[in-house]
Length: 183
Picture (cartoon, rainbow, N blue to C red):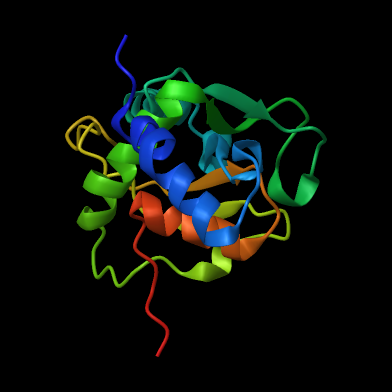
């Protein structure tokens, strides 16, 4: 099995650049990506259960892995949700599949976003994880527009192995993620 392009780039070049730039003494101190979680909320699935099948097939095509169904933990009468109802789907990517998805996301999907001016740096949390919300799934070429019923948003969370925001920003810039330029 071949090593994904971004993984070999990380091992050969990015890790050494990060070690030199921030003065890490050990390669295990260098920030890395642990996993990528892709989540689609399906609130409209309470009326039409077929929506889950369509969204699952689209997310499986995008990620290369079968998603799992997330069910409601408790009933909420205001939203007409009962405990155990399907309300979303998610997939967690690790290792080679994670790097393959990140490569397709950076080089193919991000340039297809309409009116794209860069990814906002406000998506970081205090643990060094980065979340980006997408409005439509059609930016991925794997999604067949004829079979899709409607535009569906998703959130992509990239979980890293560090807690400092500056390390993660430097890591993502070396991977090629385009951030918004600050004026």
